[in-house]
Structure formats: structure tokens, C-alpha cells
Image (cartoon, rainbow, N blue to C red; front, side, top):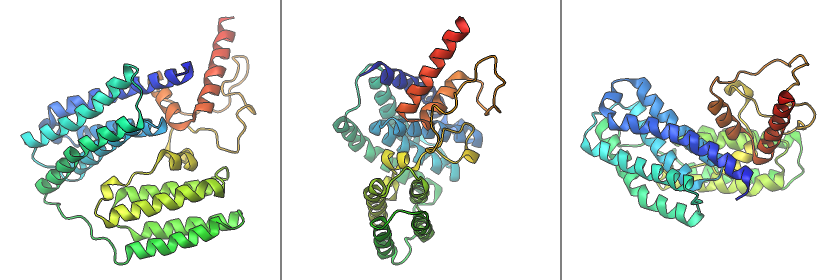
Amino acid sequence: MDAEKQRVLGFFIEGAREHLDTIERGLLNLQAAMADPEQVNELFRAAHSVKGDAAMLSLNGIHKVAHRLEDCFKILQENPVRIDQQVESLFLRGFDTLHELVEKLQMGEGESDSDGQKVIAEVEPVFQQLQDYLKHLSGGGEEKAIPPGFDSKVTTTLKKMLQILRAEDNRGERQKLTLLCDQLAQLDPGVEAWQTLLSLSKRAVLNPQASYKALAPILIKEIKQASTLIVANKGHEVDPSPNLRKLAGPEPAASRSVQAPTATQTPTAQPAIAPPSETPTPAVLLPEDPKEIVRLLIQQLDRKKLVAVAQMLVRYIKQVKA
């Protein structure tokens, strides 16, 4: 493992441990946490952050387990329940798996695909049992019915998308693809991840740096797989891949504090940090905690841009020392 990748993993591990501490504190006193909606929200955000950071680094085992933990916290957000020993035990078993994966990563044991799949297979029944039990306690055991003809409508729409992706790439055709993404989203099978998947798909289509050749296999495959899972009542397994997230690019500026360079910007066109003697450009809003700044950068930049930012910072620090 090269030094730069090791450094990035170190940033991830440091942030993940902080989020895990938050989750552990909440789970050890979950009944009290349920009395304060903000504490439940904090648990959800902690799991969500670990999930997102792991996805960016293709740590699939950690990503999947954090995602399932996040799903269960979401049920607590929407349906406050009376916490009993079984709820606490199931939550802690799921959390222990996530904690163990992060600990192994810290000890230098890289996460292989086979190990990640094995861990997911072992812990999935725990999360499924927890999710079903929470729905039972909240009286919400029945999921929203899948719209009639959902599967056939998805198939028909995907055929239209595939025809466009095989034709000439231009702005008008991409606009047609976004409209088809909207149509799929409007089918609304009652699975939140379905909406997330279509939102990412739409952003990927609008990304001029994502060619039709790159879009076609990922877009068609993931939407089809998601619809198949939903029809099989496995909507909780729908999870947009890191490849789709990469094609989608960073979130729109309005939804985040720090904006990553767009795909059309050249990293060297303008320095990321103005020399001390120059008048700085309008500042972006950054957290006060340096760890949070690093976490945001890891979330929003790919490896190449992270390396470029690190090199600029090193040069700037040397200038200041001089």
C-alpha cells in the first residue's frame, strides 16, 4: 500500500472511530436516547457518515454494515418504540461487526472482497431480525405496496434509455435520459434507496465527463437489479454502487458546505490556496475542526484530487516556514 493511500485510510479510520464512539454511547443507553429525538438523529448521522466515507474508499464490507445500521436507526427516527433487551442485543451485535471491521482496517488488515462478503452474509440475518422486530414493535410491519406493473414499467423505460445510450451523445438526448429517470422515480415503490438511486443516475447523466460508454452498463444494470430486489420484497438491499456515485460526481453546491471542483475545471487553473501576499478569493464555509475538513475532502474528492490538494498544502507550508 502506497503512503498516500495509507494516509487517506488513516483519515477515514480516525473519523470512523469518532462516529463509532457516538454510536456506542447511544446504544449503551438506548432507552434514554429514545426520549430525545436529536440523540436518535445523531446516531443516524454517525452511521450515515461511516457509510458514505466507506463508499468513497470502496470499503464495501464497512459500507454495507453501516448502511444496514443506518436503516435500523431510521426506523427509530420515524417510529419511536419501547426499547427492550432484544432490541439492545440485536443493535449491539450489528454494531460489534462494524467496530470489528474498522479495527481490522486500523491494524493493517486490508478488506478483501471475499472477507467483506462473508461478514455481510453472517451479519445480515441479525439486521433483518432487528428490522423486522422494530417494525413489529412500531406496528408498521407491512411495507408500502409495490405499484401495479412496476417491474414491466421499469423494463420498458430501461429499453428506452438503452436506445438513447446507443445513439449520438448530445445535450438533448441527455435531457431525455433525465426525464426517464424522473419517470422511474415517480413509480415510487416505497423504497427510499430507489429514490436515491434515481437521483444519482440523473446526476450521472448530467455529468458531461461521464460518457455514454461508461454510463450504459452501470446505469442499466443497477436500476434493473434494484427493481428486481424490490419486486422480491428485498428493497432494503438496494444500494447504489461506488461506481455510480463516482459517475454522479459531487453533490450540488447548494446541499453542502464545501464545493469540490467540477469536472470541467482544470485543477491547475487556479491555486487552491492563495499566497499570503495576495488578496484571497471569496472564502467557502469550512468547519472549525480540521478533522471535519479532512473528512469533507475525502468524501468529495477522488484520489487524484486529494493528492493534488496535499501537494499544494505541503508547498504552501514550506513557503510559510521560509
